[in-house]
Length: 362
Ligand SMILES: [Zn+2]
Image 1: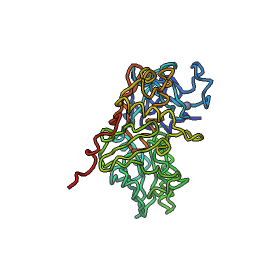
Image 2 (image 1 turned 90 degrees about the vertical axis):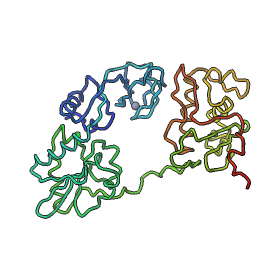
Image 3 (image 1 turned 120 degrees about the vertical axis):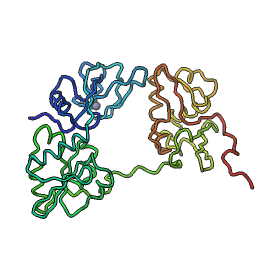
Image 4 (image 1 turned 45 degrees about the vertical axis):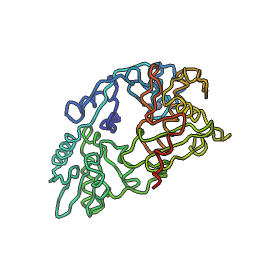
């Protein structure tokens, strides 16, 4: 069985220095189709690690790069999504690959020519092949822009090829094939031939059209809508009482919200969760705290046994805040054992001067 090379051109693909994919990865680098950097990584499921018994899937192929020293050493496995404490796991040397898209475009064109096709690239990433007055196209999904990918419902058969297959598979009609660029390069370009024949015969393998209706519900609109371009430094969260925070964003009056309203209450008892208590504490301490001082605070003490327990509350609070404000950026500066938790938003122990947010009376 050939090695599973399909994902080798996914940006950030991690390949063990010694392993079944190393040779294929080297070939991509030698041929200029990918750049590699050496990084230390840990394996999600490594029988020699202390956490192997907790593995969701003992054969999970997930790998993560070890974060820089002093940064948060807990990361999520990209495959099974369990949390990995990288500093306690065995580290290995690995290659992290980044595909070179211009080189890949040139390679796709070369492959098509080698199959005897007349090719014209127009626009970037769309390789048009004409024969007997009929046109088909091979579309390198990664190389063309969103508008091209979604508006390419043309009277031609379009054959979808992608370096990053997981990213583009969902944009195709259900069940439509997507050829993995890495497989075409490393194994054989032959699958392009029947695809092209079918497309030319009027039975296109794939028509790249508007994205199908999302299979999962679209993410809900953020609860607190920010104006375009606004970020965490435009958000103010302040302490109101032990059950309520105030939230102020540009262009809107400040509002008071409870843990339940923010989705930060325990599901069963409906009482505020620990991450809500942590948010209150961060406000009382003007956006700066750490696990030790949190436990010794006179007001709103919130005790943590250790740094790991503290971080376990920071992670869900971070995700809740990102969801509420629709911001992908981290609402906290990078957290580490020796770095305090510092909010990127303005955290205050009381309401800011109300006049700052209200229109001046005429
Ligand atoms: Zn895993």
